[in-house]
Amino acid sequence: MEELVIRDADVVDGSGGPSYRADVVIDHGRIVSIVQEAAAAGCQRPKAVRELDAEGLVLSPGFIDMHAHSDLALLRDPDHSAKAAQGVTLEVLGQDGLSYAPVDDRTLAEVRRAITGWNGPGDDVDFDWRSVGEYLDRLDRGIAVNAAYLIPQGTVRALAVGWEDREATPEELDRMRQLVAEGMEQGAVGMSSGLTYTPGMYAKDAELTELCRVVASYGGYYCPHHRSYGAGALQAYEEMVALTREAGCPLHLAHATMNFGVNKGRAPELLTLLDDALAAGADISLDTYPYTPGSTTLVALLPSWASEGGPEEILKRLADEESAERVRHHLEVVGADGCHGVPVEWDTIEISGVTVPGLADFVGRTVRESAALRGEAPWVTARRLLLDDRLGTTILQHVGHEENVRAIMRHPVHTGGSDGILQGAKPHPRAYGTFPQYLGRYVRELGVLSLEECVARLTARPAARLRLPDRGLVREGYRADLVLFDPATVAAGSTFENPRVLPTGIPYVLIDGRFVIEDGRRTDVLAGRAVRRTP
Image (cartoon, rainbow, N blue to C red):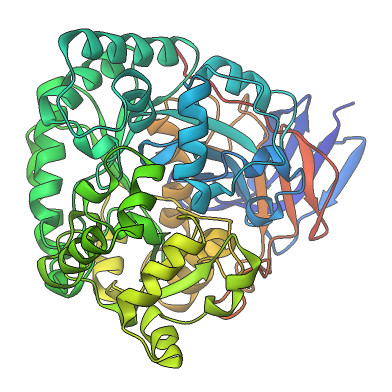
């Protein structure tokens, strides 16, 4: 007898088609049969060792977070309810061009320092890997949800070239090609870049094109955080479209937003650019989070010249009065490339987390508010934080526009990604709320998307981008990575004031046919594994 039958569920199967009522039978981690209500009339209903009454609940494929920053959180936190409770059954790691493989001892230490604000210092993690394959093997020991990995181009450049602002030599470019090929062979699904972060931003288009050719040869995709989401946003999107067309590489645009005042109401221009490229044969997808503010680290706002050489060189420049004044001028007057070419507005920069406990009073206030309390200029406060927190400070950037969020969300190639940073006392609520926020606010309350279409964007469409042959749909033979939610009550519990609150209306989540969330509570099941590229 099979292990489990989910009885009387309203199945929204991920295809975008209409829902239907059915019994879904699961055995050995797979969906073995789906008996629709009409077909069951007059017939004996399927039996199993356990029966779950799903009356009033929607059954859908598990949600795929196309942009996650859980690279260390999955290892240090077996519970990982931040994502499991949302119905996320697969996260894509290695984002924004910086992560922890491939590395050697030198670059591992440098990367750990550079992205402390994203993932914490990692002092509680045993870094017993160096290659992409070894990192995936580490995930295979058992994690809360499944995880795929993108080769981080900035980490590759740090390993082959260093943190200097210069072109790679032919030998260094060959080394980077080799590292990308090795990572793809070991199971990565593609490559990411962080082109407003060092050292990835120092790569010219020709270098990126050559690496994308390698990615494409293995059937992977390129996922850039491109060079500007502000003053040069449209040009930056155009650059990525042209680059990947030249390389013959599929393109997935990370957190595809049009932010800052210069881009208010300009989402239609981006969508026209994408439509024209798609009509010409480009292979493009994108992800967004359903909120207006962004989130990153405070150090990420600095001009690229100030970040050359890595974290220790940044701290030396900030400690030097003359260099620090140059940084301030670029931030406040010129518009630093790290701040997307837009002069910083300190009243939009909210401190969300610090790594030094003595700085906790800054959290929850904007830089301008904290500066006013201290009777000092905002740059003095920001510089103090950067130095005293040794670049570990995370921020929210209140620079988005709701009309842009909704317009991009409606585009046919859209998928969901949280971009969730789990660090800090007051992280962005998207880390805990992205997927129920889509279902509750943008489907039920606002009607921006239908339920069926929204589920497709969170399941089958990302599975297709990842080339996963047996995930993303409720189909016989597919893996039983599934979510049961109440469409009338599902909602994000997290808010900007209380961001670590779990969602409501998602009572059951299964990975590999095993309950990760049961009756609304996290079980002790660690069913997640590394999901490697399908040849």
